[in-house]
Amino acid sequence: MKKFVTYFFQGLLYTAPLAITVYVVIIGVQFMDHLIPFDIPGLGIAVLLAGVTLIGYLTSSYIVESLFDALERLLNRTPLIKLIYSSIRDLLSAFVGKEKRFDQPVLVRISADAELMKLGFITQKDLSRLGIDENLVAVYLPHSYAFSGNLFIVSADRVKPLDANPAEVMKFIVSGGVSLGSENAHPGNEKNAELPSDTSKPKNA
Image 1: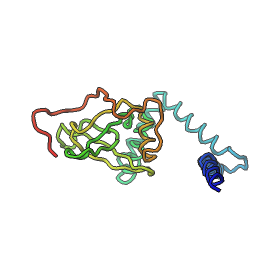
Image 2: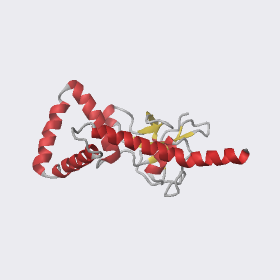
Image 3: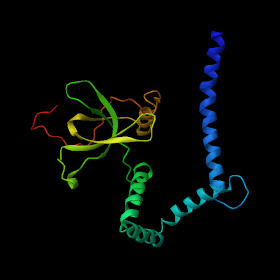
Image 4: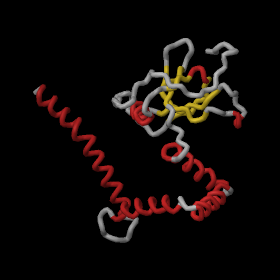
């Protein structure tokens, strides 16, 4: 009976992630297919991928890029639409844009008198536009098993840059520490990053 239970959970370990992945892909493809008024499986997602790629190609030209910039300026002048559009655009740019924000994993010391630390990503090193002290940085701390997180403003001397693959660190956090790839994922190795520092005043707890 023990062997049966062991084999069952071992099989579940292999089949469940695969089954869930296939299910999500099928649901996504079906949703995309319903957007196109033709009964051809996979046509919706093919059209979507081709359309997005075509737009990306066209925006490489000066004329089309100028048109999109004009449209963007118009959207940014509309109160409610500006909030929605800019938030979504900044979020996507943080992952796939030219100015990625989640590319510097760090280890943040939460308390000065306790060995409690969290993994996160530096999103802004200069907060002077917000009137915030130059020795403070913005660090995003993702939640485990969720697509959410918290933004903290912390002292730069409590932030330790990591020489690690950002994607591996993100996966490690989201999985609750279960998933740890072998490629460049070595939390604890210090990376030379240009962080503001202030050695003239003692560290506050």
